[in-house]
Image (cartoon, rainbow, N blue to C red; front, side, top):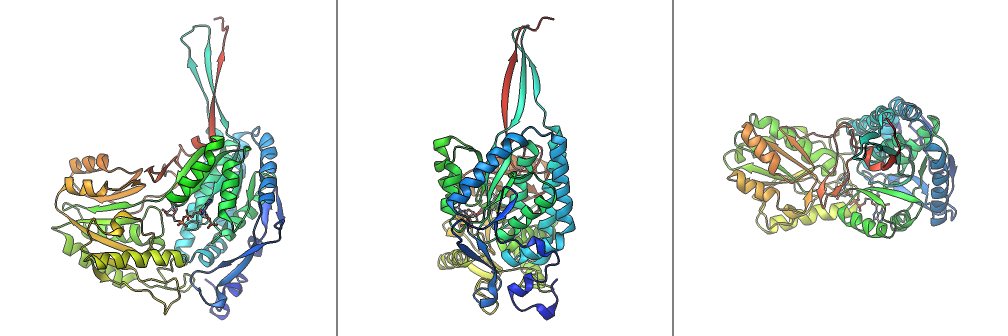
Length: 507
Ligand code: NAP
């Protein structure tokens, strides 16, 4: 934590980061730190201190169309060499980068708190989680194998080569400023691809710190390029339409994902889309331990103040245990919730990211209460703490007509919905176009299989509210996107399969 003596403003706080080399404000192109060709810049603010003056953390260069075009050219040239390197060599690079992230974990966590607002313990967890993707993909890099397939023609052999796809455009959100980058870059580098990265404009400092560590780890010039930019629509369009970029990986909202898909259609790019969710969290009447389900609900709903894409968005509780669950949930929240600046001792929950997020939280609460929902816990904006703070909130008597049932809140509101039967709750859980994560608590084995098979999502937590790790194939279905990140499948999105038929084999 920062010493109390200096704990007065974001800029002073940043000066307390031990390894000051991690603080970069220029773009990173072809191994060089470069200013924007227009010299334009934008400010990065600490969401916990908004709207006070001391919210400004840093001023970062905003890279232009010209800068992007140059970076893509460099990444393209770099790819021609990098694709020929061995998996073992790329494994070494990734492992070194993993080690450097771990060596700098405390500084990286502080930086993450400053620009994202999450509590320090969560940020430290994110650094380790983010680094684990470099470790994981360092292990995958030497094991990317092709295949030999017997042909119908006895004189032929079919050889399957797996090759890197090329330059990858990577667009990431602010809610995991480190992990959303490492999950994509780890896989890209493991396969021999090069990258051009547009980080979220709320959180570019974490991305630039990773670029610095990649430089320290000895990554060849042009393999990792990071271009902060205040115009995401310009950067997104350019990346999606550029013929030298062969793949785009995006994490963010479904609305933006759909724009990027349209823009990518002219060059038919391979795409990975990690988009929004509307996760059901179901507690059945045969739940073994209601306290554990409550813990799982808190972890899954309120982590990062409800701003993770796998957050529970709708909590379905069987009517026979509804009151018990509700009472336990509220008493646990009363015991554990300390809202505040993530770098202050004892704080367990931070702010939402910005005004737009606050607006959505308020809209969901007001719409629900207007239609008969009851506020069981919290319910208010906390301007006493700052413009972006909102109580962790629990709503009771929520129904399917309410906005919060149909739309991802991406904020700290837990709507409780009663149900009577398995079929009814499965129907309600699947009543959405989204399908990222889902959770349920049950004991009966037949019910576990029935529900697991019936819920339309890409990832399910069964008797747990925490599912993410590098080994998990992460991704959704439906309007939550496609492609899988992490796990042994994570490299597939960055590879092409080339089939070679070897003829005249005379054996
Ligand atoms: P968002 O508006 O889609 O923003 C995400 C990123 O997209 C930001 O970096 C933003 O850049 C960029 N962006 C915005 N408009 C763009 C455009 N026209 N072209 C190219 N890039 C553009 O999402 P958000 O509301 O900030 O984040 C929350 C959403 O992301 C939620 O729906 C959540 O579920 C989803 N999410 C999904 C996952 C997953 O793995 N499935 C993970 C995290 C978040 P600027 O910030 O620079 O404008």
